Length: 327
Image (cartoon, rainbow, N blue to C red; front, side):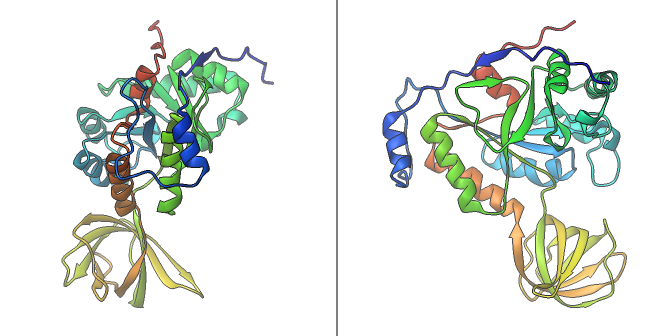
């Protein structure tokens, strides 16, 4: 049976509110091309956290962030390291070398609230130890499924500087270091940009989380079945990608999820599986997460030049949150 633990210490996040910006947001007005805060004002923050440790963090997302001079955080599930479609140890070190933060996402990705305290402690302690054994620093945690309670948070606070959950909210006012709030990155780019607008107006910390960086395409005239993980070739555009999974719906017909690796497919391309030999005609894009990330990063840079794109650990530094004392 679980025993109650004292709740974690809470710390103040000093975010001063800007009245003109709040009035702007309340009136529904859109800031100009380069909304600017007074020089003495603490900057609003935005972070991107990629959960699970998918290899697309390095293959697709990192170059997009580098193009904007930005970095992000990747939360790695230890048991998935080196398995198909997940980061290898060498890739984790490469991401860390590029300035990305490596976060813990436990060892086996359990729902921590279902475990006994000793098992929770083992998951959190071992994941940090094994990641740091790869030669990368690990200070912060992401709860699997965003699941946590008072017991989980108390144990997390022993091992980590901070931990991120969900909550679909901003980090403002007084925040719990073991319960940083975050929003899932949805496919509605306009809605995500409005969250950025609000974070700027409130001078708060906005954390987005997402998983594999992929795209969804609508296909026609499909013949055969693509194999998970095989390379897809688009002709005549020359684009390539990695097949993930396909779906069929009466309204939309056949669609596939794939990881863009090079080039951009064009409507009318013939898609061919390198191993299966399956083919289809590329009809149109249903959504494109790399393109959305590119648009959102550019939106932040161009509209809000004082808004800092930071890793979770950098955000904690800027807010004056002390590092966890080493044992």
